[in-house]
Length: 379
Ligand SMILES: Nc1nc2c(c(=O)[nH]1)N[C@H]1C(S)=C(S)[C@@H](COP(=O)(O)O)O[C@H]1N2
Ligand SMILES: [Mo]
Image 1: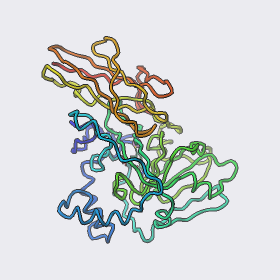
Image 2: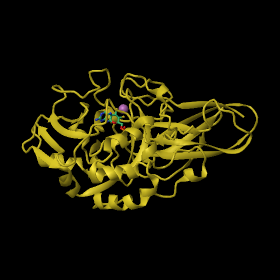
Image 3: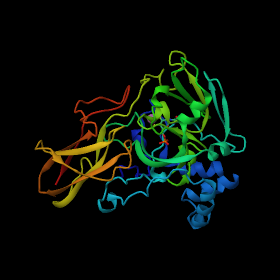
Image 4: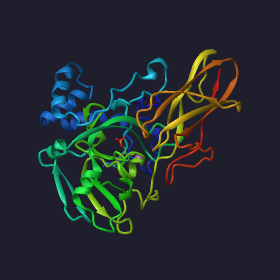
């Protein structure tokens, strides 16, 4: 089972039907993608090819794609060697687009004509802005390694992924609109009627962006093409609007995002968490040398340490994978000489600011799950 979303079935059992996880249809998404963009011009052709469905044309079209996504003004170093290559079952450092979880309330993926699409920034501002797709691409673009997580991700769950996003700075854009005194919320809306609001104060220098690219591809249709918001450190339902069309500067006491009236918290910083990817909970493993491994995240400072406990013993310090950014997950692993028996394995993360992941269990409602991921395995 691929905890990093490699489970292509889309795991519909996990979709609760309520909450920000209501429309998880990962398994179907690529097919829809083909339908929507079939014959849809240059970008359509790009999508067809990069979806992986038309493999033979891949090389040719990737070449075109690089022309369409401009080079960033600021690039990140190349992604380092992925420890997952040597650790079966461990989530990849960067989640491939095809494996990235999908969550939204869209009945159908919005069909957006890139030639008429605009992003408007309106509301409590002195200078409202309207940007076309090419206006966006002309702005200085930068790369951001950021783990996007759903508030509905249970402890140990799969509604989380790590990507290298490409986009322009959101704070610069908002500054250009000159927000009026009293505006305290950035409320974004999309083609599908979704909306998400987060505090204006969250633009505190962090690398919030309007993303147009994801892992070297034009933003995939299911992940919000042509543009979406990514705000490091906030859950998707308050920030990460896909198929973005409008950003409104407003007040929390006047307007609320889609999920707020449905019982979810207005403020939604991502909680420190960690997950065991391998061994799989409830599985039987052969005795001998193996890995206990997974991922951990601790926005905004990042993970400093991960500890693993086997059958209530002393906490063992895990090896850590590369730190891409403060809000990107970090892989961890320990070597384990498994001998016959039944084992209970727990994990906890410690952030760079010394915050220790709490054992106190909380459900996903209203502002995200917490607690230690604990699994049981038989050797
Ligand atoms: N337009 C739109 N954007 C949306 C949503 C939605 O329902 N509609 N859901 C949000 C939620 S709850 C999450 S967790 C993320 C998921 O992003 P992904 O599908 O790219 O993983 O998108 C966010 N953006
Ligand atoms: Mo979500």
